Amino acid sequence: MSQTKHLRSRRRIPTAVTNRLVEGAFAACLGLAALAMLVLLLWITSPYPDSGAGGALRTAAGLWLMAHGAELVRTQTLSGAPAPVGVVPLLLAVLPLALLYRVARAAEGPARATVPWLSVGYLLVAALTCWFSFGTSVRVDLLSAAVRLPAVTVATIAVGAWVTAGRPAPRSDWRRLPPWLRWTRVRTAAGATGVATAVLCGGGALLAAGALVWHGVSAAEAFPQLTDAWSGRIAVLLLCVSLAPNAAVWGAAYGLGPGFAVGAGSSVGPLAAGATPQLPHFPLFAALPGEGPGGPLTWALAAPLPLAAGLAAGWYTARVAVPVPGSGHGSTGRRGTLATVLLAAAGCGLAMALLSELAGGPLGSGALADFGPVPWLTGLAACGWTLLVAAPAALAVRWWRLRDPHLLLAAGVGCRRAGAWCASLLPSPPPPAPVEDWHATGARRTRWAAIKQASGGLVPAFEPDGPATSIPSPGSPEPDGSATAPSRRRTARHRLPPATAAPAPRTPSAPATPDEPYGAGDGRAGGRRGLTRRLFGAGRNRPRPTPETGGSRTTNATRTTAATRPDADSATEPTPSAAPESSMPASPFTPTRAERRAERRARRRAERDASAGPGATP
Image (tube, rainbow, N blue to C red; front, side, top):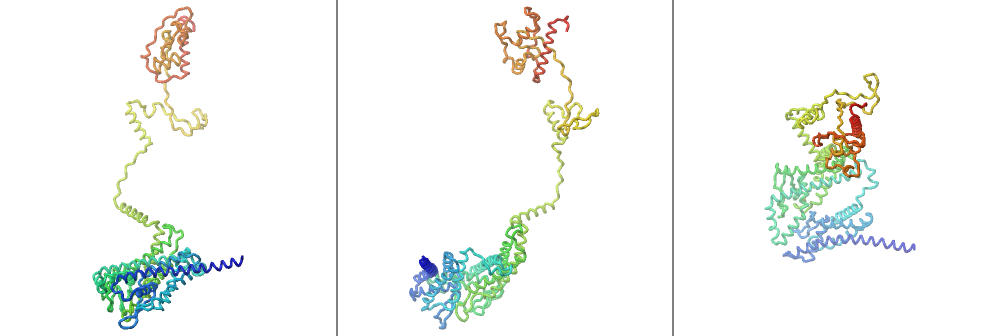
């Protein structure tokens, strides 16, 4: 079992290595094939296919190597001496480096095993391409290929593997560095460096495009001077497009101040443009400014470029220094912000120096041996401008973010404060008249008087007619000296109702007769039936049958009549009937049970007195 596991482990290692080698070689072959197809298409459409398909493929191999930074050498010149071609079209390097980066991202396994074997596979194809490029008028410079090509390959694969691993921070080496060189600060400075470099290159591209449009006629006349065939003009146009990033770097160097060289001993900058040697008729060379000192127009066009780059770097640094607007939680101090700006300025200088080195180079020997910006001057100018502008900008933005939570909110608050200040300058209007309280005594009296007037006298007066008597508070002494018992009511805010006279006693009416079974009188005889009759009308309670009319039931009126007779056989004396019910005034209230009982007792007493006669004793 142990031998079998050992054999399997030995088989797995070569398989993984082989896969990485094949992946690296495949990425190189894809980039080489894409350039070969483009060159073959131009060779097919060219009216002068002198070198044949082999020469076209060797030219494609030389361009692929040149995309990685290697210089080419032209062996067939008028002087007979080989002439180097070191200006690398930066756009040409996008395709092969993108493929290499993609393969590094897709590779599985740790970076220590991925980076070396992918690089080996890629460089093997590059070595074969160098060997294949020999035997033509344009070959690769072996020294530059041996130095630049491995460096570009390993750096691209390492970046891809680092991004695949999640951009981890270094483990032990960075901990020994001082606090201002910690990984978080370096990462922030790298972001500010990228922002500043992008702004510089973008501004340089705008300057180059503006100059090319300004000299558009001269640039258009350069095409027919180079070739008469449409395929040749298309090739020149593609070459100009591939050199567009180089023109952007040259424009950035022009805006920073050092400028760039166009031939040996010449310099073109915003302050002055020196004499240039005889240049070939190329469209991009037509956009160069004329010889002479610079004017206010060139200064005005070049000055905003480094200022914008510094402001962008300072804004990025301050934004990371104060992550939460309006709060100091997690923010970086002024010293830390300045240290980050210093690192960003150094990184911007290094980036611009590297781009200047890649964007320039020789185009021949003699007067054409120096083209492009000077790397160290461009890097120094970028570092100085970034530090000079970004430091105060970062501190100002940091102070602003600590003070106000958001830019739009701060603008709104500022506008509101400005409006309030302007309003304070105007004369103030007179104060409004005091409004009486709704619950005040005067307001209540006024409302009650209006209601009384509108009701036509139906509403009583606001104040009672009787004297106001306040309810004594619990424990207060009475007029006779005694104290009142405590009560639940804590305050005496209400007044007692006025004393009214006692109601006059009602005169009992005559007893009811059989013809009036429910009684008439004052309208209260008959108990509940009489009350119902008063409330709902006489139609609800008709006279019920009596023994005299042949009925079997005895009503309350019959019982009352029988009780009032002195003798059962005696005839009932006729009594005067009461007034009709319709002539009686309606009762304004409903009598209570005690009142009805008292009225019945009074009626019986009156009936007894009437039956006894005037001579009877009470």
